[in-house]
Length: 257
Image 1 (cartoon, rainbow, N blue to C red):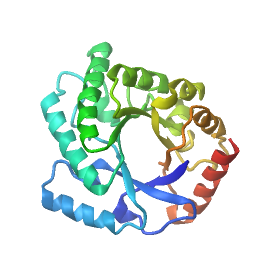
Image 2: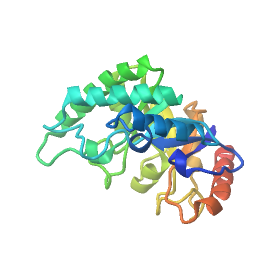
Image 3: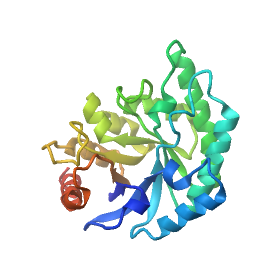
């Protein structure tokens, strides 16, 4: 598995042994609501990054609703089209649809309708992503961050319903550990998993810093045949100081799982 770091490219000036790529955020780097001049500046900054920028998460800000009565399919599709086009210019391979504020089901809105909305979105956005050689991954989020798609099993069900080759699933060990999502859910999802985030469930620090053992998740990923990217997405106290040890511990847990 390849180890990467979630970071804005402009804020990433160093590296650590074993770190292979950077994963950025859609808003700051792909600026889908800004004009081409603004995007070109972000692209230049990314090209100066010492590691390749191959993925982006946080597809939608909270004010752009993807569930509920205010979800506007046409406007969402136009936003996604700009995002995917710009992601392709970066050379990105993966865009992550987590976006808890955007995805949160409004009070009183039927959750089944919201799930149907997400499935319809995934089908449409998968077609857009495929045209640019990108995979869109659905990210389950813990229950505090969102009220729908909270487990790997729930995410897998929606991805299966969408039934599109450019739509896959993300597994995040932070969200799984925080909510007690069983590693067996990864095995059950199998080849649907196309991207991984990681962090400790207690405090969202780097794996191992509070002693958490995430090897059961990595063992499940291996059993599922996963050999792709694992992005460190955590809250740092002193990133430059912590990063080398974080990468080393993550590599150790992956290899000994």
